Image (cartoon, rainbow, N blue to C red; front, side):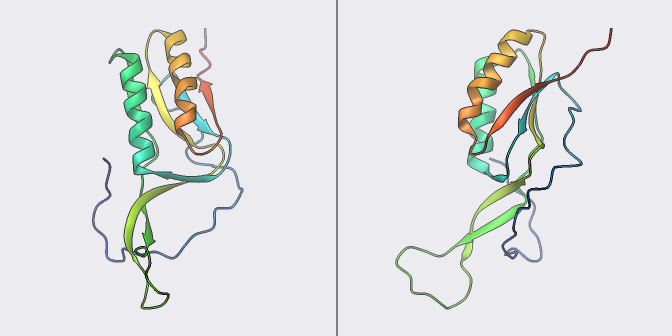
Length: 139
C-alpha cells in the first residue's frame, strides 16, 4: 500500500473540493491509455491499490502501469461511540484529492483492445465517474 512520508502537521484542516478543472495532471505523459476523472472526489489508498491490482491482473503483466494519483492528504476519524469534544481524532486513512480532468492511471501496452477493455472494467472500482482516454498518434 502507498503511504506518504512523515510530516510536521499530520492533521490538516478539511478541504473543500471546488469544481474547477485540473490544470496540471490532465494530459497523458507516460502511457498510451489512461483513466481520467470526470467528477470530483477523494481516492483512498485501498481504492488505488484495488485498481492497480485489477489492471495488472487482467493485463497479465504484458503492459506497464503508472499511478498518477498519490494519497498525500490525511483524513481523521474518532472511534465509534466516543462523545463529542476532546480534540480531533487520529489519522484514519490517506486520500488523494481528485478534480475533474485529472489522469489517475496510465497504461502502456501494444494490445490496444485489451487495454481499453481492462480500463473500462476497472471504472467500477473508482468512487467517481471516470472515462478511458487514449493518446492521439501522429502519422
